[in-house]
Image (tube, rainbow, N blue to C red; front, top):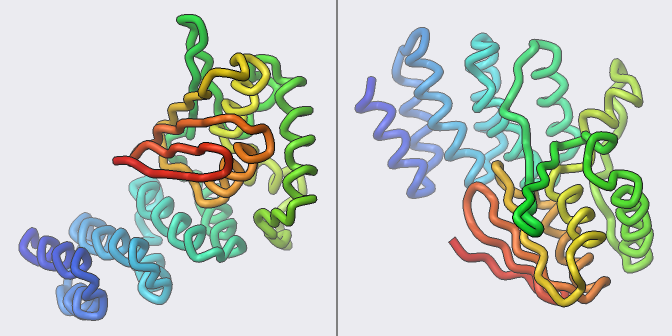
Length: 237
């Protein structure tokens, strides 16, 4: 089994997704072996945006429920990277239906030896929450005036509006940035740390906000450093 998984991983890393897919179908795995093999293929398919294989992996892995948090997140990220917001939301709704949870996304900033932590969607509990929300709304309007178009997610028939707002809540790095903007002196760079990968939409927002307010931001996420300077973004591993 390990040899098959390694072979699938190597083929995926070299963008030979069709070969990796055929190899995965050939092997008659059961139980946790299925989880390991198809999760490996899923990760590679997400990287190379092969949504056809992502969909197949979703079907193969759907029976694992609680053990599937990582695979579901990979599927969600694949749809997010391809701009397929509706499919991304459907994945999260399926996770909610099955009671599957991922590690909560959080971001933090350090100011005067104090660490302030922010969680996705938890606006009421965040430091200086009212000021942060007011500022983020103002920046949202200014971004829209400059042509910004964010996620356009259609409502899913069986999901309430309140539930959708919870699902697509304000990402933790945006809350941290808002807090930094109202707390950090204007001449200082705002530095945000995040425990997960920074999403594509937040990249766009940070880049535009940096240009609007004329300030520098540095975000360290799970994978790399992201530098935003007057609307220009640079990445360092």
